[in-house]
Image (cartoon, rainbow, N blue to C red; front, side, top):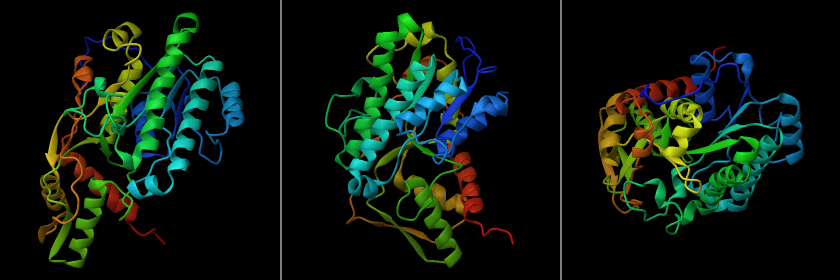
Length: 337
């Protein structure tokens, strides 16, 4: 949902590079751009095999030849807690390199508009709830994914620093958005490496198929979390990209220019489990393993800045979970002979 009193510009006629188009967010951005009437020929994508964003020479050659007008930087090396703990060097290196290469080479090629997509993990572990943009760099990060979070903070500061140094002389406008927990088409439903909502979808589905009497949930079920449907995130990203400079600058600061994107609502893990159970059609009971850790009691984004800019999420959680379950069934269905 948008407020049409806010001034925006169209992406039509521009050549748009969506970095990370095979990921959940990048794929949703491509879908939304097409739905807004951007011709497919104007949406430029590359697979990792075609363009390794961590290799500066490849990124330089790409921007030198493709005449890009806008960049959505949705590419990232991502993983769960286990992967972040096991391969911290891989996570910080890959994410720092791809951000630095894309931002710098886009600038050198004369790209004036870029949107960097970050993560809510940039905020301190004990940040006041809901987490506002000004909580950045006010405390210690969650240790389990600190290297990834540091890289995402660096991405924000890359955009801000290039704006501070080059906006007046080169007309660039590089922006950042920070999503809450995302879910939807293209999600990872791996039993060990997925996030809480897709993991619950898989577990309740498998329990239903096996007629299992119960599903065991880690922890007490009391922690509260926020979830945003990925196509809402894509719509918000395009909305922020298209805001005119005066409006964007009026709601941000040169060294605190990132914008939170979320639903503005949270629910307990127990409530989420009940919702997924209903959508999947599982008839058994839900048990809680209270010997397992809960994690932070609450994680909710303060989205008042984006609301003032005229955008709010429109997909209700129950509707989004139904769509996500359909995507899970499609992604796990056996291939036709």
